[in-house]
Image (cartoon, rainbow, N blue to C red; front, side, top):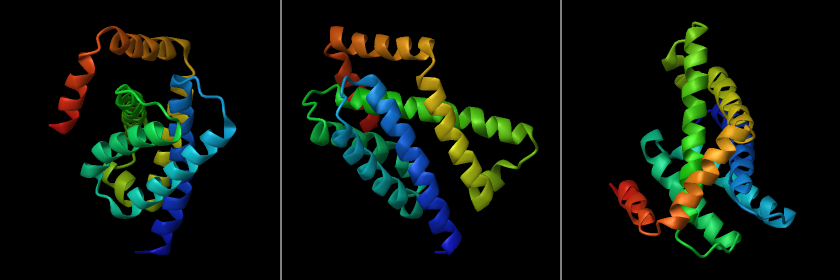
Length: 168
């Protein structure tokens, strides 16, 4: 493992942790700074470990599971809907990733370089984080997320299908 990879992981983890914390807390009514800080620190640790050791194929499921667990454990949301908050967050991050990657490819950067070159990977991940923070603050997207959350509140059995989807 190179020093460049470790440095990139530390920086990227900060931005990803910040973005995820902002997205999650925009969906919740939690205002306590201490809980936000603990949540961010756990996300930061996960992100560093994830970027260094966890293969890309496993990150999606592990991310959704850990975020739901953190919401359940730290924020004391003891309902099944914790997975919806995590899934909404992953959807926003994935959308941001598609937009940023497409933009970088349009600029002439090879998609393989975005993954394998530490400088491009760092730039891409910072842009992904910033774009996801921007997206969660757009009124239309915030309303859409609240509608999804309300849908899961109204149709309690719908959450079971989301769990099945994630397991498959």
